[in-house]
Amino acid sequence: MEIFLSNQLFIYLFSEGILFVLNIVALLGSLSILKSWDFNSTKPKQYKLEKRTYLIVLIILFSLIFKIFLLPYFAYTIDSLSSIVPGAMCGAGVISANEYGNILLFLKIIILFFIGIWLIINKMDQDAYNYPFIKTKFWFFSIIFVLLTFEFVLELIYFSNISLLTSVKCCSVIFGVTGDAKIPFGLSTVMLLVIFYLLYILNIVLSFQKNSLLLFASSLLFLYFAYLGVENFFGTYIYELPTHKCPFCMLQKEYFYIGYFLWGTLFLAIFFGVSNFVLKLLIKVELEVLYKYSRIFNTIFVILSSAYPLAYYIKNGVWL
Amino acid sequence: MKKLLPILIIAVIIIIVITSISKQNPMITTQEGNTKKLPIEIIPNHFHDIECAMTIESEINSAQAISPSGKTWFFDDVGCLMKWLEDKSFKDEAILWVYAKDSKTWIDAKKAWYVLTDKTPMKYGFGAREKRGKNSIDFEQMQLKMLRGENLTDPRVRKKLLGI
Image 1 (cartoon, rainbow over the protein chains, first blue to last red):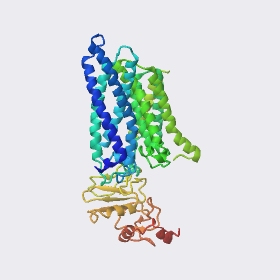
Image 2 (tube, one colour):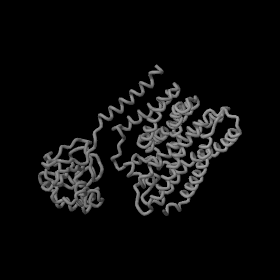
Image 3 (cartoon, each protein chain N blue to C red):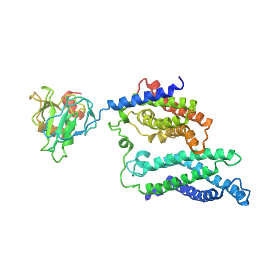
Image 4 (tube, one colour):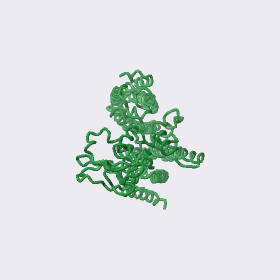
């Protein structure tokens, strides 16, 4: 429980608490709108609902955009806790301090995807004159709210179960740098890189072809192989150490916080890659601009990751 | 061609993954059921040393320990075997095999002779021989030296034995 005395954690949980209260207010408003909304009606109730919609959307918008900024802050909080959790050298040790950490991180990323989709639907709804997606977006917010509730509870359980007396594992143990770390499917590093770059090309080709279903699938595959690529190859050049295979240490000051940019661009690349297919499912709309953003962020991520090994090779004349 | 490109890329990725899976050679740290308690043939890069976590690349310098139940552990260096064995409850009953460099066969570790200056994977320096040599020591002495840290990893011992 002493962990709650950490400044960063206090600020984080306080912000999360306020957002959760705002979300409850927004949910109640959303439900009343869902119950009585009829755009064709000319009754005062509908007029009142339209005015209330503006407020509710504003609350949701504020809370969800704030949530986006809270994910990097969560990573920063976790990283800062590594200085007080015994054994932890970076966020990896703190996240795996108990069984809830990794589930929480996964849930946060999923929620962020949902928030992104909600923001796009909301933008399209507000740009139209007759609120065409209002019911979809409030239903969708209700689903997000369920996830947010689950996340908030999980957060409280996770943080209250981090012991400051028991040692946790450091990243070199978690990510197996003691010599037995293996890339899944028996892939060699070279083959992993071949798949990484092939998937990047595939994403670019599919985004030009506007094939949302295949782009959805290849983006998810790219997420997996890009993570493996950073963990097993690109990350080692960030640390300039062949045995250091941690996806968290790069979030630290010593590596110029490059992890935030790297993981951030990967997230955006994947998000824009999958979003058109999800939008098609939800509101039967496809946006050209999302394909363009997918290409841009995929390219930034690949350039950013590849720059480290290349710079190392140019400087030293050898690979790690 | 443009339409075929994604299919081609997907096909290449699938081929790479399937080929890698089929080539996969799972690492083995222990092997159960060795009731005859005979040494198991070392397949290069297939066995894992539980003590130092290194992959065993060759049977040269390697060792094996077999518990009374027939469970076998593999080591890339005799020194690793000694370190690992020390706190095991069955250390007196365990069957220990070492690969002798002179006869190129597996021999009982307790009957082997050990030179102190071999080039071994973990640099402890203990090399097993079937026949007694000029400066070789027996199993008990080797075990004692290893556990005391009197091996080539100690700069003073290295200086004394190799002059470097």
